[in-house]
Image (cartoon, rainbow, N blue to C red; front, side):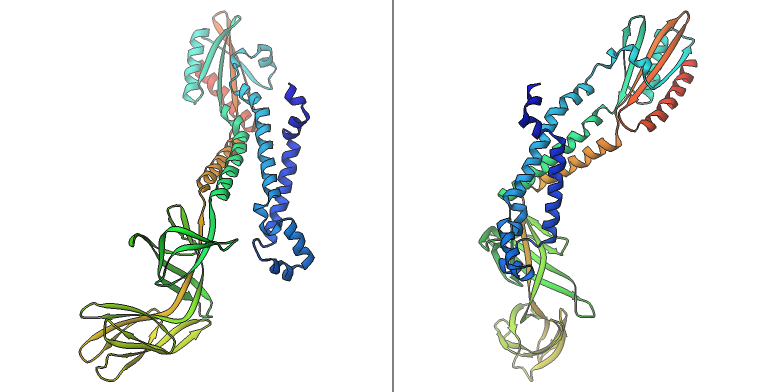
Length: 442
């Protein structure tokens, strides 16, 4: 009782504090959504004003979700939930574990929901019949002799009283998961050209290099365009290498990332170059050679003892749709032909045939995130769904049947109560009494 009188304890166990904290978190979250996060100081000066930018900087608005005051609000909410739960849960647990067979008989007779009938059987026989009938309907009964009567009790959904506390616990678990991610995770990015490999990304905030512990290579980037020249979809084929060996590969899309060793690679952007990626294959021997060629430049092919270059290109927007290829292996006049980006063509020379595929060269923009707390957050979300289901769609339903001998007959008084959905329980209660009357008469 001393804890309840303690003003500090009373403050942290207050429901008003919880509502006030949730209100502040909602307002600040709206601010963090409206005002772009993690931009440069000049961005806020340009889009708001210099004075506003200074205020933003003082209040850590550009990095609000990592600011001391926002984390402080979350901590205050967590402490409030913990204290509230410890303050109220013992009483709830007492209700769950209560010995309902000790309920005062006078209370049973005063319950709003009750019904009475008389059965033409003995008390013992009727108790057995009612127990079996209730068991068939999912009610597990207990019984105890009370004065000159026999009291039967059954309940369903006692655990539903814990729903709100499961939700409280879920919020705490989500907070812990987010904290783990903040302390031990990171977010970064890298612009990776096709055919190139990197073992390093760069942190969002500081641009500090972050080693991956393995290599990632962009084998190919494909871009689909609308007729207007706007990008429709883009994908990258990524390969993971460890000690020079391929260990994993996948095509990634905007909503279909690659995850490897706790790191997730998201397709976020792209960049086009004025260079071109050409792949030349000797159709007979199968020898392949891939080269990167600047526009209107030519390069020698060591494998095929030939030269190749891009002499013209057609564009739509910022993307090249067709390229004109020049190819010469010094076996007759050079071959020139148009090639649709991403397609291939067969070039017949004096004594050989070559398959040439070409496209504009791109770099894929990858966002990389490591969040070791994500599974803790998922667990918390699962707990919240469970808690909300228990809290809103389940109720603690209790029924008592008091059996009293009356000569060769037995009178029955059935009472019931529910902590939620009282209208639904009332309908179920009287339907159950009708069935039990019928069963006892038979």
